Length: 232
Image (cartoon, rainbow, N blue to C red):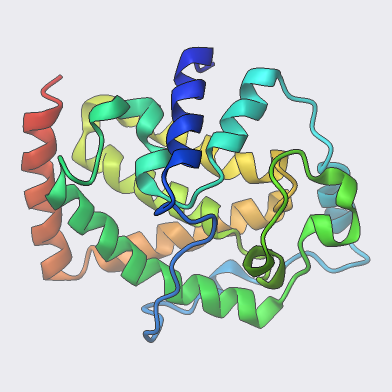
């Protein structure tokens, strides 16, 4: 469990930095994979899985975990990985790592958007406002599809790549990537099946991106940068 002090710092960063938007950047480019096909359709309205999704929207969590979920509201790798790497994990200090994150946005955002448009699943708070435990959702969030989760996809994509680049911290990084997606259920923004679909989509995108020589070069540059910044 994260310490309260770490959560307070993360929350301060999340809400003090206007550059960290709640929703992912939209990239106007052809998807590199078929996101809708890979994620598959969300649970049918009359299915047991959909009923389970709705029952899961009132989780009982500690004050610390709720604070973490609030800190996780921005769609940002710098926010997502702050609990692992601390205050030194910044775009200004790590420009080559920032390049990799920019690559991921370019690869991940179009298939997420295509899948959301294909399925247009309503978000949990639209039909049951009592599920919202964090900040009030903005208009863009409310208008976008719930399935698959962009935060879950982003968190898992960043975690997969950072675990590869800093293998000495792989377990903590992967746990953090999972928690970042789970925070969306705690906050009432997504159903659990949205989270799972986001992770599946992220895994497919990152696998596909590894076939790109330029992405591999960017990874190598970031690996050297991170080795200097975090030698242990």
